[in-house]
Length: 470
Image (cartoon, rainbow, N blue to C red):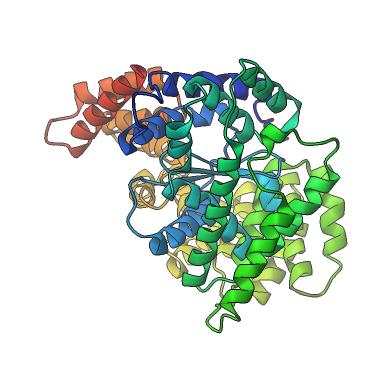
């Protein structure tokens, strides 16, 4: 059974409290919402997101989504913010950007996608909002609305609609104030046009922007009832499709478009679906798709392999994974998937052999490195595990559990003082500030001043203290 995501009311109340507190000290008539303000806002939100959203904390997903985000940022140019990318366990067709480069993509949105370019297009659109500082501009120009009210409206919109979201927005607007939604629609077009330009520079297929808008149009038609005007922060999909089509016609055929290999996207998509959907509803869908003899059918059998592995049907899982390895010998990560079944069966040495082979072929793969490190740690080879965990830190900046595992391994290996620091980072990333403070203080007390983690502990403690005052 998969853990149920936090209920929407809990998420909403927590998010609103954090956001209203963030924006309350500002007055649009007297102060501009600066880059510094936005950075503080982002840090405050980041300190609570693991509590308020059901994020998928996984090395594979984190590395993949971060890699795509950095690919976009490479063409976007120098940035004010340190971007973080998250996948949220939420079935709504939604993605949104929070202040200072926090980008969230719902699992339900990824599930509708057919290829990597569609995901890149959505992420580029959200990065466009951050680069253009649309949230800051809305706050600066919202002279007819209080900051707290604006924050509540933005929070309701971020939840993607629905009865509760509408109720929050209606309540926020009951004060008689209004938000300039026309300006917001202009922001959306600007983000669309910006993402189109970046897709061109990346030699990604810009038609994927059009296919995602077509899906949005279909979903908007299927939604029951009418969407209130105050939720229309996106222009109608038809309108967006019109100007994207104009952009495509003006640009002409892009002869430099790179043919994208969708193996990794499809694999990640199925891993996300396995983490967010009940297997009883997913199994019939994959069984039907797996009947095809093409690549789509083959990848559906990959999804089935994950289900059977999760259910303990290891022979059937192994059969499908071996089929994929034969078809894709260039994908060492499949050896890692196969190795997990052996470890689950108690054949740890066989699993480690596959993990080491996959790691030798792809030493920078976070999923393989983490599974190898974890299994080594559990097998008593803690020193080797620590080295692997430490190598992962820069590759998966949003992967909270990595810090917990590293802290535990260091403590087992006689370095409890360093372990306290990583336990503090883990608690910080999980939004548990009191526990983070406790571990970081312990680290400061026990670490020698010459240890780089001593200064890092102090710096993170200072950041927590400053955020608690906001």
